[in-house]
Length: 333
Image (tube, rainbow, N blue to C red; front, side, top):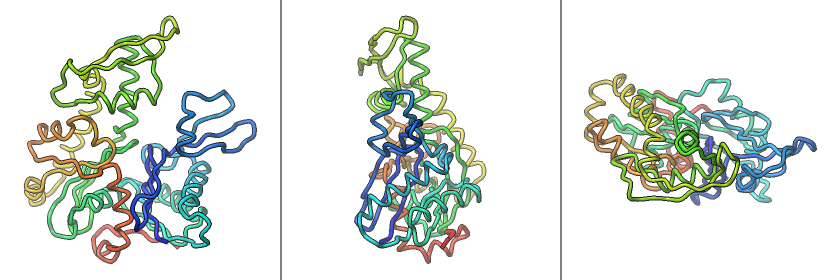
């Protein structure tokens, strides 16, 4: 069996030739007294903000790379075993990594996959996988720009002839948006909310282009002064003000990539437009905001959450072509 893995900071997605077969949060619950892992994925995610002192919620990946080797290895092994079941097959695995990953960080990813039972491991850069999954033909001498807004990082890249020409990454992404919402509610309404509540607010109330005050939502939390339960009513404008600074970081990163891009490819991008992928593409009207800031067409890829994961699985059928580009897929046995 051939497996593609999107090793995301927020979500761990596994694909095969049958499509997406597993998608769960990249979270591990660890029992500090027993020194053992008690839950992984969805089960651990449901524990966030609800655990006793002796159970710690760990996110083994930070900013797109492994931050806790032991926990990441266990998580990768657990998810691969869930996909394989009782099959004795040792799979080939393609793992998607950020374009800025170092050799040491890449080696940590490889060792985790090998220890989980992989027969052979390939690494593919995130922008390449994102465009493949979005259905873009990257084999032609034509520039294509992708903005992949994940949980830990936003990757911006220009791709041509199966390779990355220019890329840039910022750690402003989904998790930073959640933290910005928490901070805004604390400062503006003196209300303390948790990560899961902030994420829910972000997805339901975000409108980053021309927000209004008509669409409202009541949220509950804890008053930071009295410590008592309290609820307030917020609108789209609140969410826009909360994430405005983070959005500026992303648009500035896009401008930086344009500054580094050769003129001929700039013309191609003007014709082809910008492709948005990742979970962050669901922020309300973010395509319109980026289009207004750049003056270019901007579209959200179909099934944007899983573009990177789909691209990793598609890499098997395009492996020879991808290796002809100036960015090779590293292979490890």
